[in-house]
Image (tube, rainbow, N blue to C red):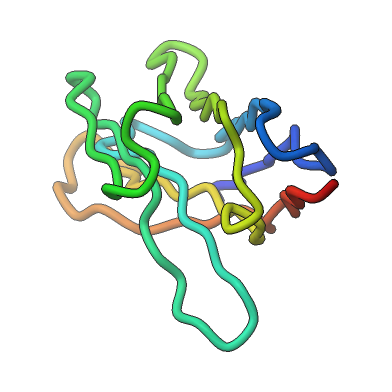
Length: 122
């Protein structure tokens, strides 16, 4: 029904930048919140940044001032600009979207991308 496709991960040196992108497609009426989560081995997936359809944003404290999330409500895309990257930012990053499928049904569903690896290392 709904697919999220991520791109933009890779290997970067400490202090460098990466931009992650996420494109949602399928049977979508509207998308409420889009966000990026990350996960490292042995740890729970954690929210990194999220943005509502009204462009309100939320960041985990450790990335404030370095990461910036944005979205295009027409194209159903979201991006995460990551600057001043640190080794502790190394993780698999997942795109998330809370989607409303039908105009007559208020229920929203959670969808996830397949994940993209971000490695910060010299």
